Length: 257
Image 1: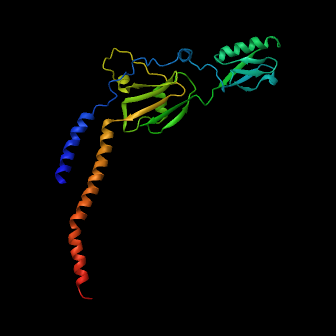
Image 2 (image 1 turned 180 degrees about the vertical axis):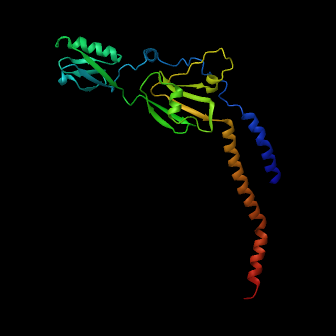
Image 3 (image 1 turned 90 degrees about the vertical axis):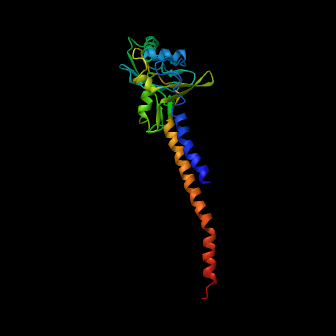
């Protein structure tokens, strides 16, 4: 038994040396376009704000018309039902575009209407951050220009076991789960200093996952093996001492009281 265990302990550092390189280091790096954003989302990024969508809230302030100034929730069909105007489509417009649409619509009923719009985006625009971060979290997005670094920072940053070369973004594209890998080291210390790095943006529904370093995985296995060896060693001592224990007990029983 001891010979086999010694062979196991000798083999483990060799195994660690073989897995010391992260299995994710050969994937696309931070300076490569992930290429998994839908066209409308790319437009939102270029615009710097989300387009209005179902369950977003629009807060209207119609100048000198307090009866018309209130908060409306965009319906599933993409419209809001407004006094005087009736149903007005909101989905797919920016805040400014919707503001212009409102002024055009109210111009039929008011003289030189002035409308201000504020937006409270739906909390369903969420990103999950999991794996080796200090605080796994579900984060609500307020801007399409939220990057993977933003959400990792909001989750407290990488844990001590987090692999900077193993940041994954999982996203449904046309009903199929797509997983892209990114390497934070390529952002801050690229192999080619002339390569311009770009940080990928996250999208509502994304799952950002940080994997463990190979060293952390090895240490975890080493702890398991060490605990197993200690248990086996204790069991071995119990087995070997069993005859002596039995003899001692038998001797005690044979002695006269």
